[in-house]
Each structure stands twice: as C-alpha cells, then as structure tokens.
Length: 123
Image (cartoon, rainbow, N blue to C red; front, top):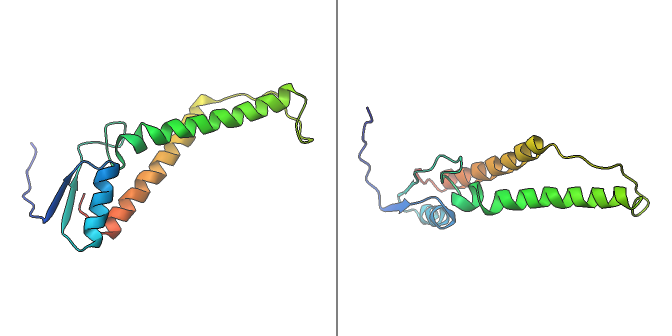
C-alpha cells in the first residue's frame, strides 16, 4: 500500500528534463522553496535530465563518438597506418561500449542531482 505525503512548497515543477531541472536550480538559487517531481526512473523512463540525458541526445552522441573512434582505427589499419602509427584491425565489444555509455549517463545524472541538492531543491 502506498502512503501519500502532503508537502507545501512555493514552487512545484513537474518534469525533470532540461527545462525542469534548470528551472528548479534557478528557483532554489533565488531562495524559493522548490519541489521537482518526475515520474521516471532514470532507466529510459524519464528521470533527472529527462529524455535527452537518459535515452536521447547524450547516449546517442556517446555511441556516435565510439563509432568515430572505431572508424579512425579501422582506416589506419586498412591503409597501413597514418602519421607513422600502424594498427591492426579493430574489434568492437558492444556490451563494453554500452557499459561506457551508461557510465556517462550515470555521471551526468549524478551531476544534475548534485546541482539540485546544492540549490536545496526537493526531488
């Protein structure tokens, strides 16, 4: 059974995406009692940072970055090296790449949480 708790606040922000958490931080910095509510769990269902940080922009850019690094090494291997650097054909361990990407998302979530805490925003 879920208990409900009554909270009084000056500012209530619904959604912890890029607009919500930034608004929360600013309200907190201005000394306004602020509560930020989000229904997500940080696992692709919203959460601090919203869609962009959790499953959209940031994870996509991380995977694109890894693919770019792979391409650089693959070209160096295929062309016999570049800048005097030679390499053998690269391989991808996708599970480790995904772990790396997930680590980036976790660090950014923690950063958003720390900024909200510093601004005294209740989440």
